[in-house]
Length: 88
Image 1: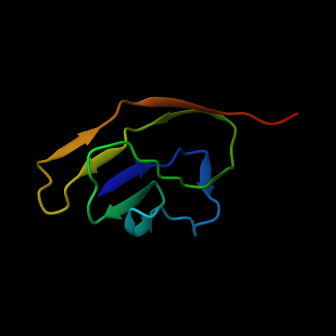
Image 2: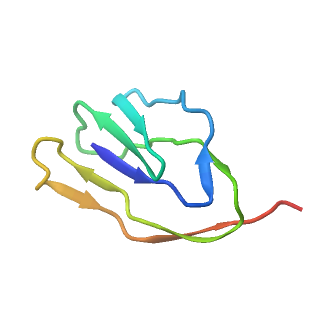
């Protein structure tokens, strides 16, 4: 299971996109949960289409990966900063 946080200034765009590695995807107000049956060692890319709603600087919590039935096996990345600007 992969939990991807959503920046506070954004909302979801098109929810139909899915990777071939995914089994299911759940959209929550503050994060998206992506469920995968089996991921082998390597690099993967999962896309979540977002629409900017409010300009500003936001702190983005770390994404978290864990085994669903053994949550003691987990990993996450670092905290990030996101800036949403208006186009002129």
